[in-house]
Length: 161
Image (cartoon, rainbow, N blue to C red; front, top):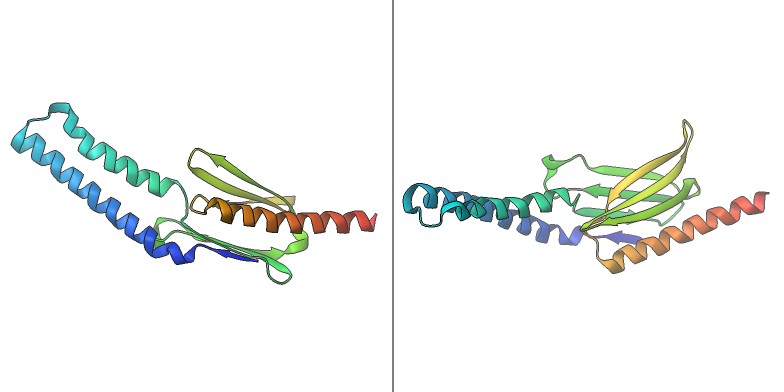
């Protein structure tokens, strides 16, 4: 199964640009209000606080682009920002038999996918991906696909015993 929200990258770029413009306009409105008009008083700080809060909310909710591919004998996860310099992109590929478990954690507006795989060094490794920008249907499809892999791995382990 393949899952990707790469086609929404232009929408995320538009939202990012719009938030930057609104923030710049908020700073301009604050300085005009503070040094020229002086009508509002302390409420003029809202011209800075609200757009800055929305911009930080957009950035801290995680990497926008998530791609998942389970075709073949390997699982491939990619997670990146639409703004290249904002964070390091993640890309992991490993055989399906190494998948032990997974969990999707949702805290307010932030959703994360935690994947546990077997590792030679420490026994298991925890991989983290940000899936905040996936829709509910996409997250359910991802869970179904990963559940199939985990179930197949558990069935193989019980057959060996």
